[in-house]
Amino acid sequence: MPGTFDGPRVRVAGTAQDSIVDGPGLRFAVFAQGCVRRCPGCHNPQTHRLDGGELRGVDGLWGELRGNPLTTGLTLSGGEPFLQARPLAELARRAKGAGLGVWAFTGFYLYQLLRDEDHMELLRCTDVLVDGPFVQGKKTLGLPWRGSSNQRLVDVQAFLSRKAGYVIDGE
Image (cartoon, rainbow, N blue to C red; front, side, top):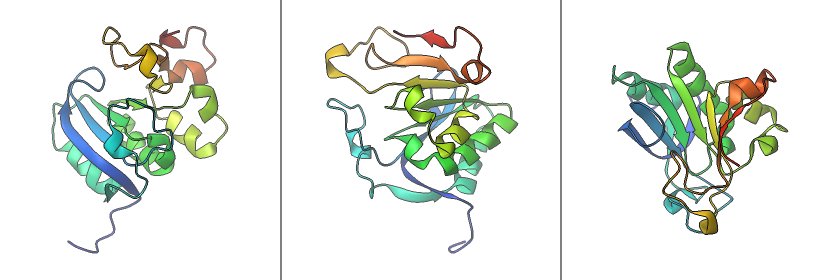
């Protein structure tokens, strides 16, 4: 129903209901709209404009995610999901509460995200963070879930609980 409150809103470039390339298993992927990094050679340059895409309610996104009972996880990609960390944290919290894994892709390195409480809110709901900018000169097709060899897979919960070995794979 038009005008119905749909909770917090996210500017979204698009979604993928049954992605098998944005993390393990069958995932619901949300591609956040807007990125200030604009990495040369970016896989999703259409997501860079901050005013592009469409505003979507978290409630509606949650309904789409729950629409497929085979979904095993939520992936937040982009653009840059950490530019909209607070509403995406709400979606991630719901996914975690339903027993789903949460992955987030970012052009920032983990240490750059730790300075902001909104970023921390999203990190607390994230299982695996793929961090680091895409670097054209380090492009690779040989590493799972990453486009360039400088990017890492980070076990965020191990990092937050101060456990050693929180980098799953990367430099």
